[in-house]
Each structure stands twice: as structure tokens, then as C-alpha cells.
Image (cartoon, rainbow, N blue to C red; front, side):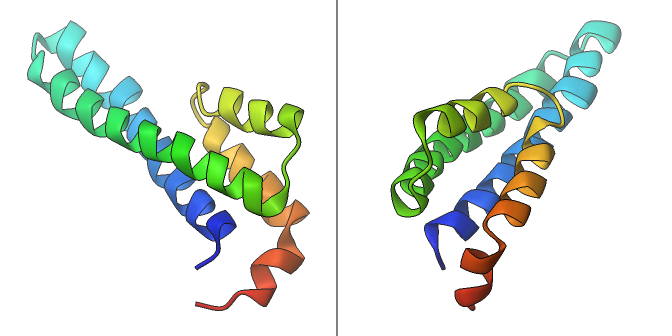
Length: 103
């Protein structure tokens, strides 16, 4: 599996974990008084975010992302739903690279 495909996968998973943290765990903590929700979701999201950063750097070296492009993908990961935009942009921009590597 190419580094770009791995990045797309971890980007999507990390994006979902961010949404769970923000839209499920945080309301459970602050509206219902269940602080364990953010502890569990936050820990899982934190590990996935570290994997995201690692895979972003690996994909950067494989696909020769520029500094601005890499920074843009990082900043999008800090915004809810930003990772899904990143996936759409990368699938459009690097479609030939994604086609040539079959899993």
C-alpha cells in the first residue's frame, strides 16, 4: 500500500474520531456530566492524531508535497470536517498515483 493511500485512510479515521470527540464526547461531558467520554474519545483521537502526523510526513516525502500543501493538510485536520475535504482534494489531485498502486 502506498504512503498516500495510508495517509488517506488514517486521515479519514482521524477525522471521524475528531467528530466523535467534538459532537458526542464533549456534549456527554458538559451537558450530561459524563467526563469519562472525553477521556476515552480524547485518548483514541490523540493516538490517531499522532499517526496522522506521521503518515502526513511519510506521504509528503513520497508524493513531494510542498511545505504550504503539507501545512494546509495539517491545518485542515484541526477543523471539524476538514479531513474529509483533504481526502476529496487528494483523491482528485493524485488520482493517477492512486490508480497505479493496487492493493
